[in-house]
Length: 98
Image 1: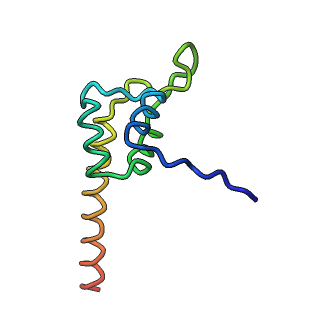
Image 2 (image 1 turned 45 degrees about the vertical axis):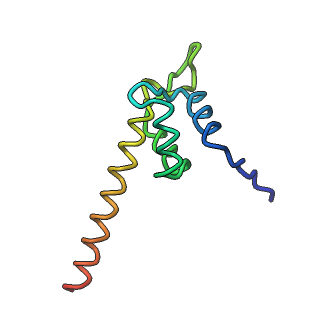
């Protein structure tokens, strides 16, 4: 069975792809988003958070996200990181004291 491989996108193409999906860059500029994607995060991980947001059900914007800004994805990514670090530390402490 052939699996369709995902194309590796440049940071500019990643931004363009997010814009096509309806992600806005109002709370965080495109320039800052490029910097964040380049230095701090993995695009596929960050983009996966968009699935938690509603899409337009119909009309001219059908299938695009409703009021989703890149800054919101960034915030979720940071919250997820802190949660993972906290849970890891808790698991290690529980294992140690068990």
